[in-house]
Image (cartoon, rainbow, N blue to C red):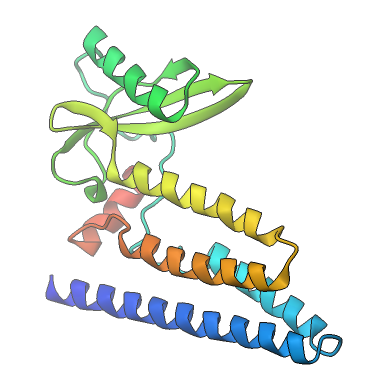
Length: 212
């Protein structure tokens, strides 16, 4: 346990260091562009492209990143008890908070949860809602006897919102404002990854990654 926590903290320290250095490099390129606008134009564009790549892909492949929720595998055990009318009402209420629209499918309730969703989680279900001819799926978890968005699904909703903000920042025409926005997004990414749901046992996380 001590070894896994130590490795985790070292990864977070490396992440903070990369984010800090990236922000400094971007700020340096912005200042250089003000002094040598023509000579530094290409270098600034390259720095922005590199920042986009770092923000959108790095560190999310680390072991402590929670896997993106998906439709449950056929290997998962289905709960013997059929879903009740009360549970359906709970699920509908939760879905309305995130994807208002028509629920087109409530999958089979499965037993067990990924360790990153916590020990109080005992069942999960994949729900698809349709709005304006666009379908969105969410994994709901039964935690403490109530259906809700579990920690892993909640984290991915936050990360997807972050990705949308990243794309919007790329469209900002003013170079200085765009640089400030990239710097803020770098800090946001650091915070986002620091509170990513984690399993206490890395070995259990590896076993759960293909089951859930």
